[in-house]
Structure formats: C-alpha cells, structure tokens
Length: 355
Image (cartoon, rainbow, N blue to C red; front, side, top):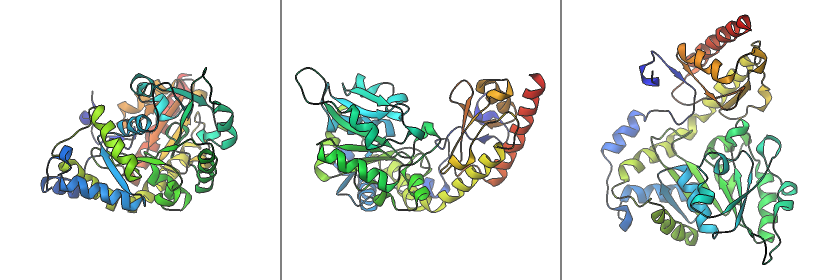
C-alpha cells in the first residue's frame, strides 16, 4: 500500500513529501522559459539572482537536488585524493551514496559531535599536515540544521568561529544548509547572517520551503562559474527548467514566513511524545521541524511501531533499530499533529500490552 492509497494520511516521514501549492502550480504553468545551458532561461536567472540577493552573495546556481549541490561544491573546492571533514552522521557522508568518494574522489574524515554540531576543537585534530605521504584536508562541511541529530543548529557565533580558524588554515568551509531557513529561524537571525562566513552554501527549495524540486548553491561569482561547469559534468545541465524555478521563486518568497508554524507543531509533538509511556525524547532539544524519539522501552522496534502507525494512516521513518523521525511541514496542520499524537499513543499502548 502506498501513501497515496491511505485515507487522510498524516505524512510525517519528511518535509520533502509536500505537494506544490496552487500559487506554485500557477507560476509553473505561466513561467517564461529558455535554454538554461545557454544561460537564457529568464525564470532560472531570476531565481538565481534572488537567492544570491537573500544570502548577500555574488551569485547562485540552481541544481536539481541538494545532494547534487553538495557534490558540486565538493568537486569545485577539492581535487581527488583530498579529505573532507564532516560530522559522522552528516548528510554528505550518510545519505549521498558515497558520492563524496565515488564521484568527487575524496575521503570523508569523520568525527562525532554533541548533537552533531562541530567545533574548532573537534575539527582541528582532524586536519592533515601537508606532506608527500598522506591526503590533504581540502574542505570542512557543516550541516545546518543537522538532519540526523534532530534538527540541531549551529549558531552564528559558532559558525563564525569555525570559519575564522579554517580561513587562517587555508581551508574552505561549505555549509550543507538544506534546512538553513529553519536553522536561521531557530537562532533568530537571517540566513545571510547565519552563513555569511562560509565559503559556499547549499540550501533546498524542496524541503522546508515546500517546492516540488530543486536546490540552490550560493557563493562568489568565481566559485559559481566553476560550479556551473561541475554541475554539467555530473549531468546537471538543464534546458527549459524555468518551470521548476518558478515554483522555487514562490517558495523562496512565501514559505519562510510560515516556518514558525512547523516549529510550533514540532514542539507540540515533542512535548506530547514525552508523556507517552515507552517513548524517550527530550523536548528541549527540538528547536526546528525535526522530531526524533526512541521507542526501545516499548519492547518493539522502530520498524514495528512505524508499521503499526502506517495502518492508522500516520507515516514516520525509522532511522535506527529503536529510533523514529517525524518531520513537520506545510501539509500537516495542528489537527494533523493532534491526530498523529493520538494514534501513536494507541500504538504504544498496544506495544506495551504485547510486551
């Protein structure tokens, strides 16, 4: 049974499952288009200019996916054989099919960090001294917000401190900011302020912002010129892609205004989960739209609990043997959250009785 076959489904698997709004569909239908490989798609050009303006950068590049955006950034900053420093559960290491090595030819240099948030004290020991024997450190990647650590965030001060030290060491810093608009809201600043010290930033239009497809890469004009060639190299040359960019423009202008609703719903969900027997969660750590909780005390696995929820038209992702992730977004309102809470409560009661 697929999600579309479920009646009145509450889909909390990810914020990637959202459907384009009527405004997005209208914009897509009416989009001016041209050939983007020639740089002639006016809607793509407007989206790229607007993204650069919002992030206070010289230029931006539209890419089909966040994974491609991260890969393009890695290939632009590094050469094969270099190392990329990344937190152990970072997306570019965990969920991008090893492209960091398979395509970019780089080695991931990983470490764990509290809540997934790296500091210079954790990064510095991983930096390789230049020699004729070992790989050279080519890039540092920060993920903000951090997906697999429950949407935890880097502060502006923390990011600035890392970037200042990295710059002194001659190492660029890339921000995997798939959900950076959520992160900026959580710490109370603009996305430009939060990421200003990073050398490049990737952010998704198709996650918290609700567009049907697409991500952006922003940086200096020189970096983006090189990244455009890398995008073509990995198969990202697009033609009349303005129909996609049109939805992205709507998302970029309208969606950040309502992200606080997703955060409020995530907080409500976390607080309710904390009161359900068999669930372990610290609601204080839920600061964006990602809620992760442990069900080991229920006596059942995350897969079993998620399967039982599915039968009740609530979709969630098991991300470990006993860990479940739920993500709030624009297609699930407060009533949907309350229904999900009620259904999980029933499932957990059943699990306790079965145990």
